[in-house]
Image (cartoon, rainbow, N blue to C red):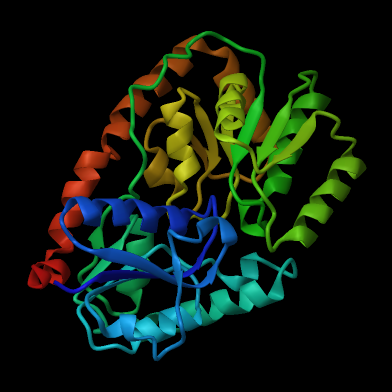
Length: 350
């Protein structure tokens, strides 16, 4: 039996695409398939779990089925697409370079190249998978008619705690510190609450790897607005993340482009109600488990945060909705769906 290889652009701790590859690798092993993950760039922390691709001529690319995770353009992606082996393409979405601004022009350029190559994917895979209907639309728009929508593979999902009691507002946001996440808008919501008589802690969890300029601009904004209650926690341990979820009254997402947004599901798992901007896949990931607003005014979002924190009936309604929404992402359900849609690529290898 040949080896199933997953191909990603780069592997790093905390990276969503890396985590998806690792989780699918565990499933492939459980299903009886020998498998490995290949990437152009491998963070030292991933050594032993992900192997570096040795160029386009790497013989492993032709040694068996490929599962290509498409989220940015990279040499590894180009090499994988050039093979003739059975192939699945998992489309995680590619952030438009324009949304990254001048924070990292090199990354923005690779994103734009990745989006420009989307039409070239037509006919290049036996199976196309998208982790949201929002992502699937990108593929439909370039002529790929059949796209299987399968949510992200997430960790074990337990019944969320019922955190129904009214609380003083306290905002949490989690994820990569990047311009499309619009962290500045989260900061402005906290400032709007401060200025309307409700001092509100804002905790921002996540690293700014590759976007240090953006992080510096956010530090400048905090100083300019005298946003004394804003705290950048950086990359945190699991225990520190658990504590951050426990201390917050509301999870806030102001991103303008998301292909799925796994931290929204984490918030639901922790019983934390959500206030979010309606953008990308956010509405379908949140469902009825939060207030998803088509607005840009920080004072509108500030009022939503205040209401969700104080209104116990609303918190109960959102909690009930989160239980139903989390059922859609149950790991066993997603695993069974993945096994079924990957069958055309995998089953010839038994």
